[in-house]
Image (cartoon, rainbow, N blue to C red; front, top):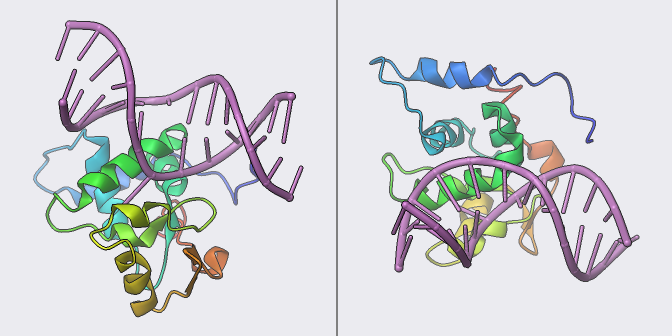
Length: 133
DNA sequence: ACGCTGACTATTA
DNA sequence: CTAATAGCCAGCG
């Protein structure tokens, strides 16, 4: 297994629920992902697995990517460009309107991108289970 | 209603 | 080192 930082409890999911004031709980896994993605600070990036793990579904990193697919369909818009794969590579760049838009936005936010890969990804990595805590 | 696909990740060969 | 495979879960045809 990958020696993660420390114990990442799925309890983070409750924190997201806290973001939901009206008592209307969104069971939709995607909705949770959207909220987390929205909390990503500018100039920072995260991975699908990190978000999934934060929600307690680290095995379902794919679903996170799927959620990003709806990111442009939900409101407010979700900064899917800040979400990359575990290698820091802009795997989802092909899903943007212009594929290059993703790295352009990242560069605009101060993230260096080289060959579709985030430079110093580990340094810019934003772990919701730790930072959002 | 059933089956395929898919913006991932970890493991095995 | 790189390549291929399996596991995951939900939207869409």
